[in-house]
Length: 101
Length: 287
Image (cartoon, rainbow over all chains, first blue to last red; front, side):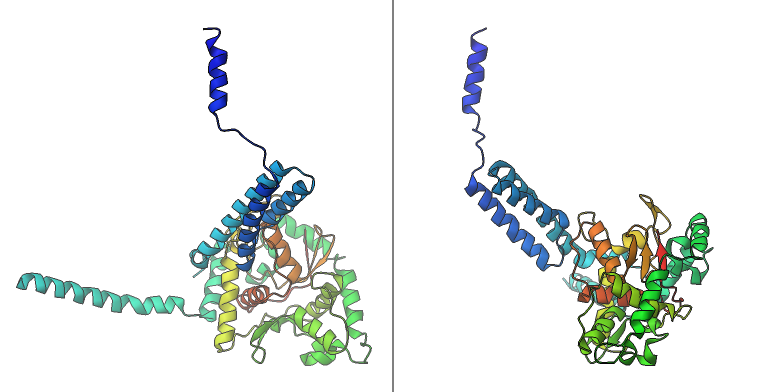
């Protein structure tokens, strides 16, 4: 019993997907996706300040060689940009619900 | 079979009648009607705040809170915008390098005309604000334009507003599809939610005037531009209408548009038109 527990843990760890650190290619791909979404939001005249900040944070982390953080920040920027696109799209009609008539 | 056909025909007929009865209402609701919009807008505030005198709405948060109003009235004895007003008066009278002055660019020499801005320029097909007209005047006379959000523009507009104090806002929307489109675009901008906070202009200034947002008491949208430009203690200085829009956008975590973007010009047009009849009170002072 005493011996089987460490063995089981070892087996579980070896089967778990390895969480590898992000590399520069991962960051570049994530950043390109986020930047494209951000540009789309800007084209809709609905860019969010937090998207811009997240993109800047991604660049800063990448410049410092921290690609884990850079990739995470790019992912956050993409999510924010997509939310702003959704907002701009739904508000094309939704604003009418607020109108004083 | 005959019964089924009769039922089908009957249903189709009823549907057509229903469509014919409802479709004119749909068209009416989509038609741009600035007069009806202004009436509805003013009535909303008059009914929501029956104790506020109509002309008092232009005093923003002070119309909503008696304590704040008393403090403001005392401050008005030595108003914080006084320096800007004096500077604006001097700037307005100082000739450009070519010898002309601002008075040469405006009707009635620029005095007592604030209540007519913004206006729809039928030649350009766009809304022209007072700030835009001032910079165009400068450029036409060989001068560099001023920043739309900084002190010089605020000083000039403060002086021009002061010469119109008490005059009722008098904005025209000509029967021109482009003017109606600009009015509608301004209305859309006013009610559209934006930024990570998911706020529209109306979220604060229609749904919540008189309520606090952090330490501030929110101003009603009705007459909100009649007091522009304003000295804001929060800014430690003067601010133009452009600055107000840019700041509002930033506060909702939306990237502001460039000052005097079409959207800002149009929303200024909409907000000014729906305040028609209310007095100019600018320059104003706000916490």
